[in-house]
Image (cartoon, rainbow, N blue to C red; front, side, top):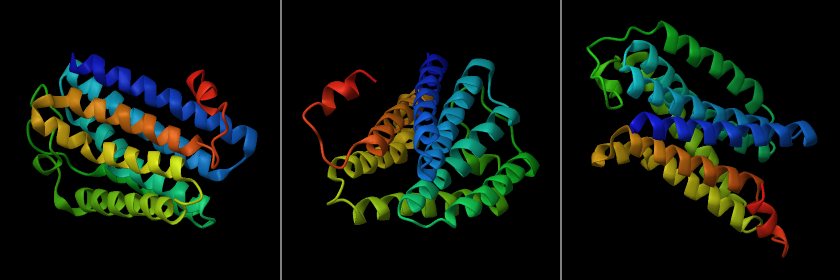
Length: 219
């Protein structure tokens, strides 16, 4: 059951990432590409959960999950918010960081035995330096960038920024859901809810026309 829920969450997040990428192609707005990459990384994390729950967790599934969910998602979403705010240097910086993070996730030693089910805790399989420290910094900095940019422009885009803040809250609680007895399915549900809220926030207009809700419903 957990694998199916996680697989569904991955498909949903991939679909939303694709829609953002299509918007980028038509508008050439760099923040849309960064946000699409962030939701794509979120989808890969959910797919890794499905992999681990279906086939049994091992170092391969764990590395993919940790790289996508622990190291990349928040950083890419934060870069998108910084690009939206006009900080163009965020693009080359996040590209360099992404390459470094992927290299770390591939090279860092993974130790300990894996349980067949349940998302592995990073502290049981990774040393604090460098992977766990890098994940902490990336998640704190990326989340702060999203939250600060959303709050600063809240009056101009109350609906969109409210949805983005709700999506960040849902993403932050996805791991907590696993600890409340909901297991990997709880984390996958948190990923799905977070992805939907973030996507809706990214594409919401500053002013809501009367026809907005019907259009959104048919996307």
